[in-house]
Length: 58
Image 1 (cartoon, one colour):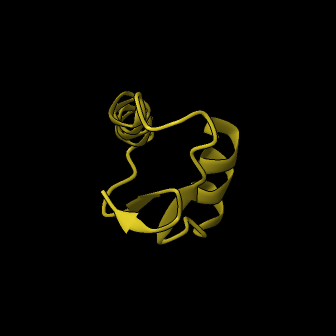
Image 2 (image 1 turned 135 degrees about the horizontal axis):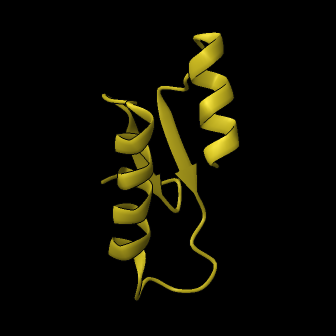
């Protein structure tokens, strides 16, 4: 994900939403979202939405 977002930012094509299916259950969604938000912060990407399971924004 880091390489994808780095390349997208450099090209000016950062997507408006990131969605991922949760195939391992919902017990660690909050942790995975926090890790993703940390990656956004490190890369200087803001104003992006995240959908867990592709159904609801977090």
